[in-house]
Structures are given as C-alpha cells and as structure tokens.
Image (tube, rainbow, N blue to C red; front, top):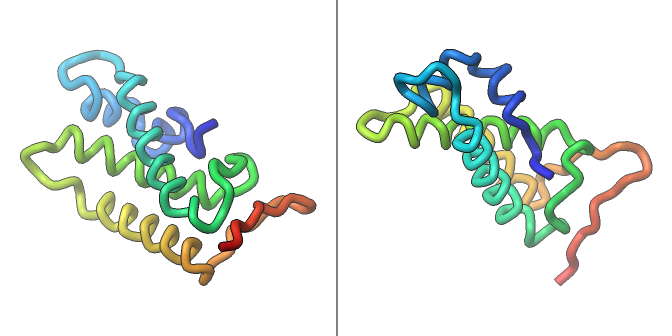
Length: 125
C-alpha cells in the first residue's frame, strides 16, 4: 500500500497541471506516471527508514508519511516533465523539507506519530 495516492496528488496540483506534467497535449492525465512517481517516493521513504523501522509502515497510521510521499512524488513528476528546466522553487523546497524529515526520523531526532496502541517495530542492531 502506498503512503500517498493519485487523488492526493490531484488535489494538490489540479487536473490541468497533472495533464501538463504527465500527458502534454492530451486531455487526461496519465495515472500510470503518477503511480510510478508515488512508487519511487515510497521506495525513497522505505530506504531511509528501513534501517530504523520495519517498512513499509502502515500508511494510514501517519499523515507525515503521506505528506512526504506526496511531496516527493510531485517533485518526481516535475523532474520527469521538466527535463530541460528545473522544477519550480516551491516544489524543490517541499522536496528538501521532506528529505530533511526523513533524515530526522532515520537519526532518531524525530518520531513518527502513531495511532493509539500501534507502535512501529524498532530494529535493534
């Protein structure tokens, strides 16, 4: 299960922008490109957190992971669509913040909030 969804991305960017990013010249967006961007975002999250937590984490248990996944996926979409230009500054900043959050969770400086009664398994070395 993914940490974010295509609907999350659509709500953030809107349909017209998704069409521009995934199917330039078309009338509808390419959901497969959106799902690929989410998959890569989630792989990044699991790679960062896998040394400290059992991954994948239950997506419904942490809104922070949803936001990180969404922001990384959006960056991935812009990076794929803007091969000759850089993604917009705001998108780059959101990616930077998402990566900083992952690094803080990885280092133990930040704990992911959990629903009552559910605690992720910590991997002890």
